[in-house]
Length: 447
Image (cartoon, rainbow, N blue to C red; front, side, top):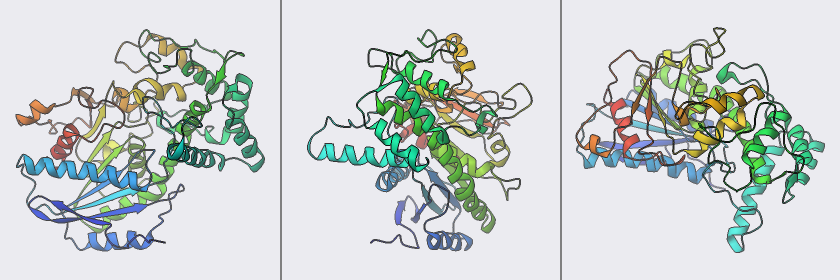
């Protein structure tokens, strides 16, 4: 069995600098580091004082080990290629060290991403689809008591579920969604009626459940709506919804209990600038790491959140009207430069879907009256609408022409967080590794 090396996983080329060591650190679902020797070697190398900049990356969901490494390499290589091709100046000296976090996040895709068909494919494609589906269902079922897990498997193997069967699935899966939502300071847990109502909205006839829900003029069930007794549900849709709750909790646990201690150690053993960059639920991993605990060694230098799968009110000064801040507001004081957050109306997963799964009955009325481009619910995603209520500045992305002309983001003000409307450059949830985001990171590194 191959063993993860205790040293760097790879060395990556860096313009006008020695090759950069690239570490990959795996954590289990509880946040326990699965490669403690690698973690120790990383801290020893950082403590030498050899490196000027440390980059910590966290992927989102649906990334196995090869997928996570590929996504990190694509972003890092793209950034380095941009610097070299445009002959950009980096800080002097510039000796980076790179760290990629891997956490168990594989799950069925949602929104505009295609999920594998459970039984329609043939040959190797069918084998891979069934293997992936089995892994996803097992991951969900492991959170349930044995007897409930057996019934859970039986229900979700059916081609369609009736409304009562969907209600039963929700009741069986209660351990996956009953936790308090700390992002929006909400003590009211979801319940089965909320969840089945959300699935009903997403299963509207026509086969295009994400077209108009949660935006101005979009069709959505009214407050208190329940599933029609005659409706049927695609089990894949149910699995997608349940994994939203599971990944929210898991990303938080990995961040708070695994990446958080690592980040504190990195900030303690050296004086290098430390930069964080996350995508999707990887943003939640990093924010949970930054915000967990009452003390913090020193500020991160910068933080880039790309299409964050968390509430747009996570940084707000007051979420509930009762002086209760968003769960990640503390991050604004623990990062030196303004936090940069991308959002895109073309990210259907976050702009149209995310808030439907997380909503409560009382949120349904809000979704009817939200103006175009405005968050339809307090559970609306950061990556769909940008940060709100946090003293933010919302601006448009610098496109290729602006970058070619050398335009930069203004990071000199006291604004703690900047939402960048990247609708022009981010075409879907996974389209975050491109020139516009490389330029954002370059602006942070050279600020």
